[in-house]
Image 1 (tube, rainbow, N blue to C red):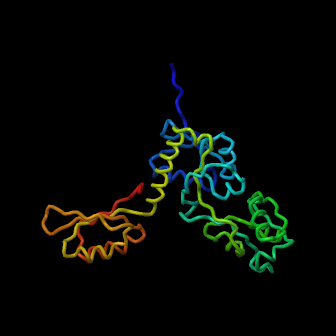
Image 2: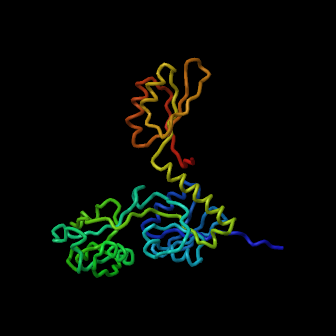
Image 3: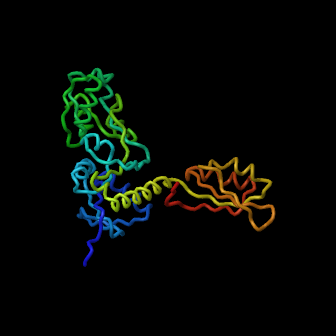
Length: 295
């Protein structure tokens, strides 16, 4: 009898997180190919069926069971008040590995100096529901309207009194001569699952396997491995130079009096560390890239 192939329906975020997500999957060992107009990418894992969806909608479709699992921001889970299983954080954003934040912002010359000054004011945002929740918690009564985009322009032009907008570095707000009043919420990418799908042992195991590889790839981002040989008499001086995640791995070489060291460090520090290692007596120094770090 023909046995139906088991598959995991996976939602991938379209838009600002798309490029970063595909990069993380590549580091995790998955090649994703997307046609110019396709919403159904191909992936080199026959057990995964990926679909591209806007992050804003992802948690709703996962909750309703159209998708078994997906990647979206914590902000959109809050906005949609979605009842899903949050399997784990994927700590990356559009440009950096830092959480993004939703902030209340006003013009630099605005008379609004605190969130209390928002009483009776008009606010534009894409994060309508959670902004209302935030204002209610802070006992602020204000009008909140949905913005389809170009939100910074609306407050800069005086169409609204304030905005609640997402920012990663703050550069866009500064470029539009806006200032932050406060943070509404922080958000990282989250790997989420449908509750029924998560109860399926095969799907749950597949999700956990996928999450393990993705988190390992993110952990390796911006880090490199360093191998070197060193005389025993210089080992204390050399290990003091290494800003290791953990103590370096040290093993004896066949040549008497020499040891081999291996360690993982931040790639940004390599250019300062390698000359110092050389001066301290290290030899045969090798730097190599990392794709995954699994603890």
